[in-house]
Image (cartoon, rainbow, N blue to C red; front, side, top):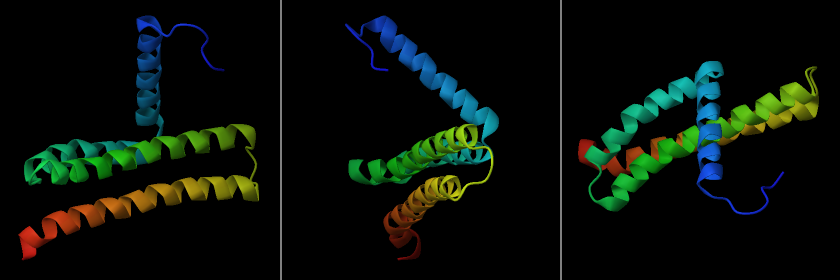
Length: 124
């Protein structure tokens, strides 16, 4: 339900707390999120260090952050599907598989962006 009226500091603080609750839940319950978060913790500083200029730095840190965001959305989809339909259903399985595929596409983007930006420096 949409908030009504003025969204002041209290509402912004509440939104921040809900986001942190979501991060904690993902960390506690999702092994893939934990793995990808650890990679982000390593890759963001590396991207800032290895990137040559603002655009390269941005590309090197954006890709892993997008993976983390997609993993959060995928986990949310899986949680809702499991709540609504605990027994197997073809559409439920399809929704979960598509969420997983979205994460995979972004992982490929990480590999491509890092490879295209850093590959020539390492192998050229």
